[in-house]
Image (cartoon, rainbow, N blue to C red):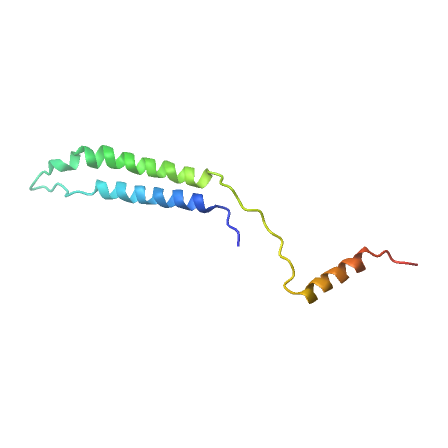
Length: 101
């Protein structure tokens, strides 16, 4: 089975998915309530760094999808045994011979 994307594409997309998950995990913090204000909600890690990590993860995902890697050529399958090889050769000779009238 041959896929449209190569091994390198899947590696890049896996790394980018991890970056996106890490970015969203960095955004998590204790929320502010009506009784208590949590100033950590506005910490740079939750707004700047986490957003940047997520953005870079999404950009890397696009790169992982668009990059064109080396592809192996399709190798034609040969007959499994000698009998099958002889049948293929016989069929080729029948097709190659012109009909006599």
